[in-house]
Picture 1 (cartoon, rainbow, N blue to C red):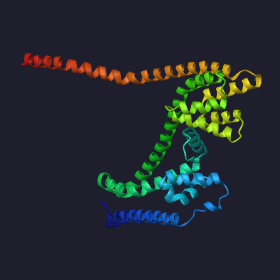
Picture 2 (picture 1 turned 45 degrees about the horizontal axis):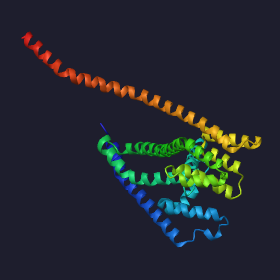
Picture 3 (picture 1 turned 120 degrees about the horizontal axis):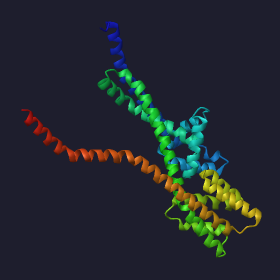
Picture 4 (picture 1 turned 60 degrees about the horizontal axis):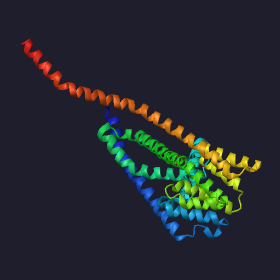
Length: 324
């Protein structure tokens, strides 16, 4: 049996936990309101910034995320922490952001810091509900603490994996459009169009592949800023991290060094990329077939039992009658 002191301690904890959660929520809302007032009454130091591109990027970040608009100082502070995330996690997020090529352009540390602020807000909102759930179904409010921690960790990993899935979807889109892109480039180059003009025409034609079009537009913008064409294409390969794009850039570099016409190089690469894409699709189809074996077998067994059920029931009734 519980001693009176133990019961008194449990009663005190159960009374203080909701009060503590209310204080945390009120404090977080007051902090966010203070940040909003500060953001609305100051110039954010834009006039003091020498980097015009950074100023424009910051304004785009504020316009794209209300949470960033309210908590930009906190996001900047968290982004400056050395232990905001492990190096593999930051590299993974940076690679995904480069593939998605979103506007505005988030850095990995900014994206992860904003994610942590979002989780902090969700934590404050989830505390009362989690305490109620723990007291009602688990028998004690103290069990809410590990439950909330597990939920926040799972939520953080889920959002990072969602970003990775979006990046993989963009890579798949680019792989499927790459042979068609190269074929159009070959046709335009053979007609006498320059490579830069061909890319600009191609960007206007790729209405069904907006992500691939955005990456090509980035290449054109880099070249217009004075970056050499090969260097701009090399940066494209680094952003996408695709073997097909890396091989294409390598072939273009080798062709220019050897004096081979660019149309011939792209024509050969188009056939190779198309063959690789077909092999990739066959591999995906084989994996899908293997994954469908289990559900298909289970469905067949269920259908077989459904058909045999009336027969088995009738046979069972006949055996019972014979037994009587």
